[in-house]
Amino acid sequence: MSMFLAAAETASTPFPHLLTLLVLVPAVGSAVVALISKQRPDVCRQAAFLFSATAGALAVYLLWNFDVADGGFQFVESTTWVRDFGIGWRLGVDGISLFLVVLSGLLFPFVILAITPEHDPKPYYAWLLLLQAGSLGVFVALDLFAFFVFFEIVLVPMYFLIGSWGHGNRTYAAMKFFLFTMFGSALMLVGILALVATAADATGAGATFDIRELAQADLATNTARLIFCAFALAFAVKVPIFPLHTWLPDAHTEAPTAGSVILAGIMLKLGTYGFVRFGLYLFPEASRWAAPVFLTLGVVGILYGAVVATMQRDLKRLVAYSSVAHLGFIVLGTFAMNSQGVTGGIMQMVNHGLSTGALFLLVGMIYERRHTREIAELNGLQRSAPIMAAVFTVVMLSSIGLPGLNGFVGEFLILNGTFIANRWYAVIAAVGVILAALYLLWAYQRVFHGTPRSVENETFADLRLREGLAVGALLVPIVVLGVYPKPMIERIEPSVVVLLEHIEARTGVAPVEGPTAERSTVEELFGGGHGDDASHGADAGKVDK
Image (cartoon, rainbow, N blue to C red; front, side, top):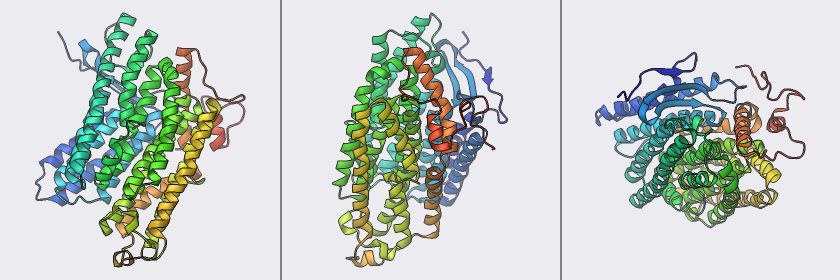
């Protein structure tokens, strides 16, 4: 019995097996770093940066060669792996996953370059590279088995990063993170096996883990809803959605700065991406059935996260609870299930990674200097560190959603799409924008304004050159995506349209796009439109590369 087949089906691209290389390069880098002597920390760091930056360069190459007009999967690689079980090495990327791949490719080398671990650099860098490989694998996997393997791989490096390089009660935080997410993953594994078996019975064909084939299977309504619940619970824990969020503040607070940046920038997006890629795509009817529940939980998360953030005394914990609120907006846009809401949700995944990642980086720099994150002990820092205060202001305003910065575009599309489809959810969620301004501006005022009340605050060091370059690398996309989001939207929206057409075909229910809205609504709002005839024609959205 032949279990493995070497033949592969790879899309014709200028760079064959690009996605495979994208995943393997940091994985191989992790093994290489593990083989380097621990007496050579500089070599470990240089090797880690080299492999991570190579993956980043491949991600940029992917972005550069991405076909703007194609809403389907691109750079597809498909190799039969375990024939008897329908398992394959199937990879692909579309507009929904493209920018998450790019973010994963670029954020890791940035973290390696910007942050130096306090001890044991060799395992630290090895775990970071393995975490990058797993994250990239999640975003490009088109096979449920491969997706689950990558989804689980990322838990181990983050567990050790928190437990070994974290602060305070790090062992408790690491264990809580691992147990929560592992419980959700166990349910998802049951759901995956149930989906594959049920789909095989429904189609009469052999078992397959290919999501493109599974999405076409006709499942009984109740069966699909039950399996969707297994997937949804796993993603809800990973996001996390209220009330499954309790592991997040502890993990963020006790994690090292690099862990917090990666957790906010990449790992939380595994859950929100899972809802779009697997929830809506594989279970369109069940997603519509469960939408009111997730819209409600999203709104509750927005308000709860904002109110609790306002009451925090620890600056890092405040930023952690702000993530609960911001992720609630992403859930809201996803389950609005129209082009503006889903596009805004995908954009906000990237925007949140940039803004909140930068906030955690700045908080880490403050802690490195003052060895405290207590807001009451930090005051008047603007006098001694005006550049840091200015950078913190821009990043904070981005997180609030100030027009002209990246956070505004995603939140506007989410609220607009939700208002069209579910008016009162948008009205209530808009209060969260006001509360975000309240807790972030109040925290900024207490930390940076006023007269320093201690010698440590009077002599607080401003940003160093290396730190300024690191933060500046995040400020550029924060400003550019706020001023000119059109190139990003052009690449996301065609895939969102394909997804919504799939949902409509499977459910018979069209997305609520407004009384006069066309499929090009999002692009017209932020790209100036292309006229009456061509937002999504064969040449629509093409830009000079």
